[in-house]
Length: 493
Image 1: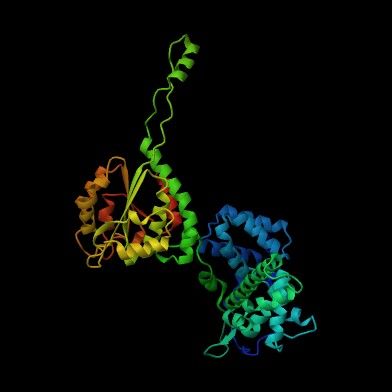
Image 2: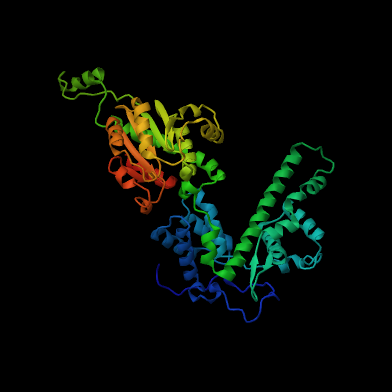
């Protein structure tokens, strides 16, 4: 970034208009954020914001950071939304990164107005003394028709009144969204709003649907405004870096498979299908690499006319697209249950890309689970049936060696020269023999063999892990999230 005088932070760094809290002693030490000189300038704030984005999993290169800095020179810095748009345009590459970006932007460049003065100015109510009924009526009006500024100011006032909770120790306090939402209960305002809006209109028609949608949107905006102000107040007390680490979830493509939630799985379903198509394409390319199709006699003869009928150049038809066969061998034990859920998603998607897909699950014995992947089946239902019906558990302790031996004995004919073998598991075998010779035999009979391990690489070969031994037989890749799965697929090219 070029060396030049650093302008002071724009309106986001102006002194707050909020009234000092009577519950805070005058001897309280300034927060880390207030006492840090490097945050007092726009340059320091910019550098800290970029570092926070990288720490949250949003990729920002040095060049992009410089682009953002140059963009600040041509916008009105006092306009906070212009500042947000400039940063978003230069630093955000994917829509999935935008939610985390917005959370961090609100922490590093917070709105400084508290909302108290703005609400008092209407002359009808003081949010510090008004009854909850009056506040709920005011919120009902805002849910139907309000600007972002009005809703944010009201949310800040409500956090000041209902979001504070004293803790042990002089002058110490915490801030929570729960107190605000419990006091105002915005979701219970729907019936009253509809009565007012639909007066004289028929219920159940387009007018009601439109009103419901507008109110629901307003509720989400209010809840987000409350959460944003709570995070701002916590950051002022504890420091931005501290709250940033816990306030932002990693982007979807970087969420650890072993820690995904049900909501994450629903979103991952949309990510898996494009990856399955790319995986099938990569394996198909490797399958037909170096091979040509049949001789194209017509094109060859036509080309020979230019050389007096001598076929100096031969032309071949493109090889027919071939869908390879796939065998998936998946660890379904409790230690990798979330990864097993993702494996089901991947298997569902891969089924459409390959001529034949056979899936096998194991804990300490192996069973074919392809029968659970019927068209239209729900993933949760499939997992429930798999747990209740599949014969994968003998003693309940993962045993890779015994499972590989059972697979070779019962299903060895599933592996052939057209088969790609994909093994998914953490390679932790409870100190049982790993049966490396069996794995060597299976890998040698297949066209390709790969192992995806959901554990961090630094944990391989610790405790009961035999990842290193298995990795000498089958190439093993760390695959903890969608980003690493994408990288693995790209390496197959």
